[in-house]
Length: 491
Image (tube, rainbow, N blue to C red):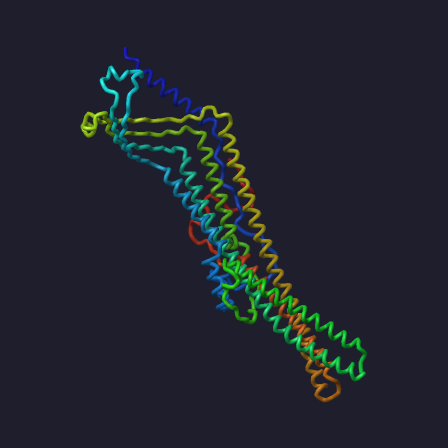
């Protein structure tokens, strides 16, 4: 009686039982994390902005110098080059994961020249030779069935990481664009204040000369000269500080571009631009697709979810098939004959039976990473809301201060006109008009500082609104991320 079929069926039954036992210990698959699909901006009192920032938002200021600086920063900034290298690294990791899917075919050719031991299992004296040649030529095919989707989940996680890296590159580009624009307009503000400081310096010098003449003539006490000299020194100190600030900003611009300050082209002073206040009407709903850091966080959640699928698949049996076809001969002249053919077929079943808790620990790590990714996403959304609200409210406060400051400026202009009229009529001497002129210049300096703050706040708001970034393609919104404010649940 032939017992071979019975033994084969027994082995197959045992393998199937072990496989089912392994599947029974696998954890339940995680559900999709529920993430919010809006940013909490409800109740923010700010005027409606006319649309979202454009992709090249800095062009709205109509400043060719700024355009050139940002274009150069996008070409030469070392920070952006670092972010781009991370994107390339993530893309190659995704390609590597994809290459591990499906059929693998490898060819091999080898020739071995070997001497047999005289004291081996079969002494060379019995074979009649001590040296022989071994030639092998073959092709090996290997296929992993990946029934439980481990490799596919790994590949999809790598793809999501590459998308996250691309979104992070966009965030890095936006940060550089913002830094260049903010530093550039800070330099322009310094230049405008330097011009006012020069005018104020000339006014204080004239006032000091008058004080000296009056003291020499015995009209005033010497203290008046000391007061005038103190005011003159204060203006000179302010001018030195402004000039130093301008030089520091120029060095910062060069650093952002990755060049030495001497390599930065000469900048020409221009008036500070007027700005548009407010946030888009759909800011709370659309900001998630407009912020690159939020997009990156969503892709990180998606990647972490796929990694939990890959860790869960480790609990299941893994079946692979290896086939070999080739030629093998110790006689080089007979290598290509039919008698040298070699064939092999090797199915392999990997069963995770006992591993000391390694699979459970690995799965627990993947779940912890998913929790961290979800928490990071929530934190990013709340940070975005805080940033938009802070800059929008700051812009409104600055606008209110500018209105009040304009009233002071108008009053000082009228005072100067009246003082100059009295001086022309000979009713008062020149000191009154010089004092009024100094006060007006100080108000103009204050107005310039407020305008510089308004421009800086506008730039920060543009950055907070995503700076023209837009997730428009289907891949930009992960399909396994559902809307809602609830935390993710496990099924």
